[in-house]
Image (cartoon, rainbow, N blue to C red; front, side, top):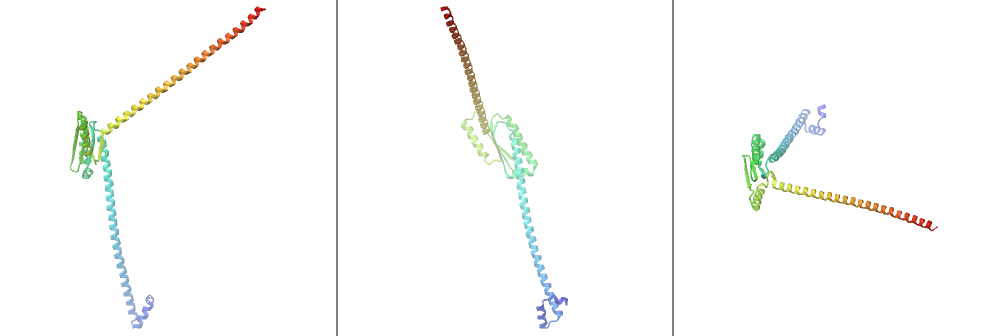
Length: 262
């Protein structure tokens, strides 16, 4: 009775009218429910597989993207290290190195990052060049190119007896070779800035001396004027004393002359 109660009343009536027994109705209903339940489960499983596959693909994409970003960040940090190391090496150069530019290709960065021995070899070579620059008797514009296969160096020598036009032409050539370089320093501009700063300091010192001299002169003038005023005051005071003595003597003389008349 309990089983029959779970069956749709309309279906029971229809089957009874058609002459089916209760057992047949139960079997039909049960098989229908199993088939329906099986269909639903198949659909849910298929959707679950699709969702899982989509999530896996999304996770893979995210992992790949994260890895790519991480590699970019690592390379950027590595390039910063190389830049700082090149700046330290550049400080070792003598004043003979008028300009210094370093080009590094991407495969050069990659090999130096993955092969510390190669990085050390390149940097030691640059340090040796920097130390050797102190024995160079003329100016040099240096351009270095570093790749994954090695390094090459180009130098434009600038001699003391070169004409101004020749020196300018060599400087222009060095500037063109320095375009797009990873690291660049230019002592010709630095020397100009240093000379300008020296001129500025000298000008400021000269103006300070002028102001101090003017203040001293004004102070001396003020002291002199004060002394002159004091001297005039003293003279006026002395004259006043003389005048008073004269008046007193005159009055006394008048009195004496009257006494003689008596």
